Image (cartoon, rainbow, N blue to C red; front, side, top):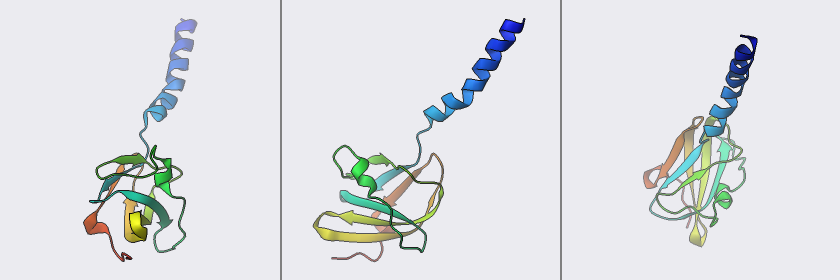
Length: 115
C-alpha cells in the first residue's frame, strides 16, 4: 500500500512540470500584408523597446500568416514597434498580451508609420 501511495505521489508531483512543458507560450501572428523584419515590445506608453523578436525566427523575419514564439515577454499591455524592409516602421498601441495566447497584428493595427 505504501509503495502505491509513493508512486502516486511521484506521478502527481511531476504533473505540473509536464503541463508546463506542453505550454506553447506567447505567440505573434503576422496578419499584415508584408514580411516583418522587426518586432519590438515596450510597456504601453513607455517607449522602452525590448529586443527584436524576429531574430528568434529561423530566417530572422516573419512572413505574412507566420507565427513566432515570443521570448522574455510577460502578460500585460504593450506597444509594439513593427519594422519592414526599406526602413518602414509602424507602431501598434496597447496590445493586450495574455499568457499562452496568440497576439495578432494586422494592417489595420499599424499606426504612425514612417516612410
